[in-house]
Length: 472
Image (cartoon, rainbow, N blue to C red; front, side, top):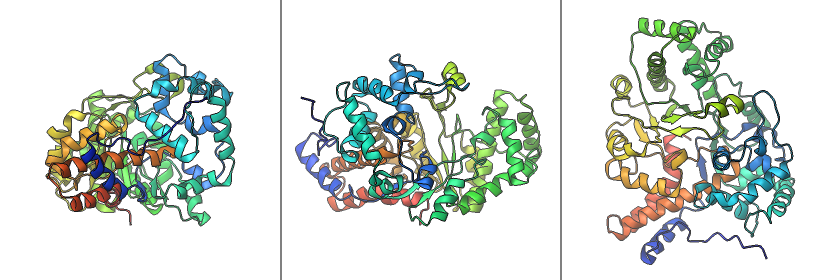
């Protein structure tokens, strides 16, 4: 007999029975709140075209770098997972075989957030009640595929079933946003918005950077070989993104460094980075100057800034050259904020119109840097635990290290930052459970009373994210 797959109703709750009872009471008040997903990487084409997802492998394995990195770490090639190389050499083409490979190695994910999310998807979305392994692989593949072919599992119907109120995707300035335009023209009422992610025209280390900047100019009708024209191109694209529903920008820089150069120095620096002959230090200064410029533009147009620094992206050079970006080879690195952000904050940090949400992959800065910064500057809020720390223990550490200095209201609620559409409810459920568990500890310690904890649980689960991203 296959082993039963059961989601315990008290999972992730405190072991102490008295505290657990408080946590479950808090959770009951927030578990069914609408989902606000203000930052992520789902494909807007899914909602524009509203076509059935093809099969379990295409939906659950191939878009998910969390799966790649674990399996690759155990010697399973990306080709075996169906990933085609940059030169067009196909990987494994039999999706059933890929699923069997994944299922036979599912035990590797024990104790990881991916296991929590996927088990939630299997039970709550697909109604499966046996554990995934080599023996049940074909049953899973056939059951999931049969459901994906039904009307109930069309992307828009799942969006509504998941009770998603807002979902933001992320696009580059070079994207024409045709899928977002199609969503609007369709008359469907689902709120799928875009976010402005300009890394490919702001990071001199980005592949084809100079060509991207040239295309940026052609798209906007601006002379992006000049500093004033380059900035104007950003302003025009930001306005276009805003007209398509964007409320935020996003910046995935290697560090949080900012700069405040005069116009002449900016012009010289732009010429160097476009020539491809800039040093690493000059590339870093350029990225930092762009962040300061983006803050000024945010004051003017109202878009919320998100800063996601600290990832050494594409660390595995061979994987990057063969397969490209986002294949599980990004590694966290130490990140400094206090001095790094000072040029931007000196220029714009006291503006009441500016809002910046800070993220980190360096947990050592929660109590030392990020919480004190957000606990002082009105323009700063702390984003939730991100990427490698989007986990039960990561969420616990975040609250423990940041709350005493920044409080709750200087944080931005939760966002799932995912490409895996079906995992969105699972990720929000984990965050809601962990926040209720943390609040329950404060109630049990008589640092909060229960009515205030209930208000805070709703803020953390729903209202803070909605306010931080200026959704109306």
